[in-house]
Image (cartoon, rainbow, N blue to C red; front, side, top):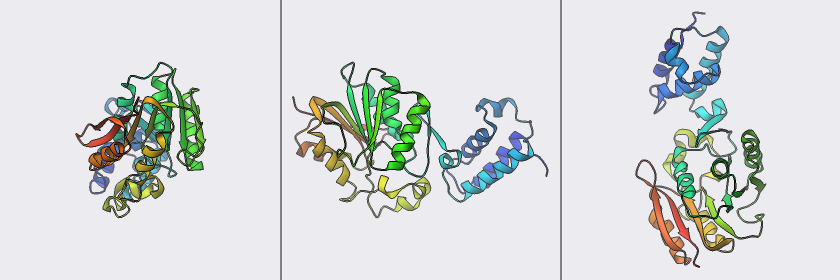
Length: 281
């Protein structure tokens, strides 16, 4: 076997992935660095270093999996989100940069120093654990319907040693502690059942239960908005992620339920992504 250098391996993989990925070179770099257990700077510093036979074989296997459409995060078992690294698997959604919009805005809200926060449908725990890592005095509760997702979120909590988070199984509010929260956050299913994007990209490898909702994608958002009124303190906040064309619809849902100060926030691409609402006093 002719051994490739780091630079040659990246070039070969980029060419292989060119018609199968929106970011072929980045995919190749992430996969190779995962195998080598090196920082990204290593590829720039040591482009001429040859791979070992074992590393080269594994890299080719990873590229073959990516050619079949398998997400990079599922191949490596990890994904970066809000400066933290999270274990991921096919039991829930892969954390996405768009969701950092919700985290960023939540951290900027005027909440008590020891705020009580609830994350519904936590998945990997990305939102809850990111908030908890930034605000160690907050008490965060995170729930998910899927037992596998709960187990994954617990692994991520243990990985980062965040003791101000409680993770449990719950069908939305069914097993949530009966108390008033200062903030409720959620990235619920919001894609329409017949959306063509469900057959494209990474979502093909993610559970439909975490993606799809009835009523044109609004059913779970409507349920959360309705039930949250029983769990939010006066002037407490709710933040919900949604599709880029759903901002108007989500604002209407909150308005119909007598929330106040309703606002839709755009993500880094300038698309409607998160809607905020506040309980009346």
